[in-house]
Amino acid sequence: METCAKTEINEKDIKALQDTIYVIGGKWKLPIIYAICNGNKRFKDIKNSIPGITTRMLSRNLKELEDNKLITRKVYTDYPVTVEYTFTEYAKEYGTLINQMIEWGKKHRKVLVER
Image (tube, rainbow, N blue to C red):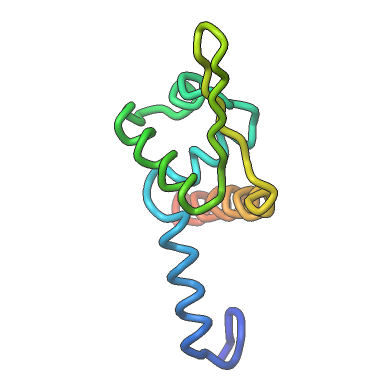
């Protein structure tokens, strides 16, 4: 039997996997992270770079990403007030993960289309 990762499965690994999925799971979190990673720092720019996302969903997901220390929200009090979102140092490793997921998704789509 071929294994896909480790030969031993333990409770801590399963919990860590569940924690990861909780933090980045859902329809919008990875596209939001990807948008910020590609230079979209303001709410409007992030929203415009993600087709189909609503203002409410973007707000909710930005808050969750901030709560999980993946992004920071900085308010500039100049007139007009500006808010920018940036990655924390802690979250930068997600860039590699996201690119790997994109490549896997492209391969997967090809596999499905070639059936």
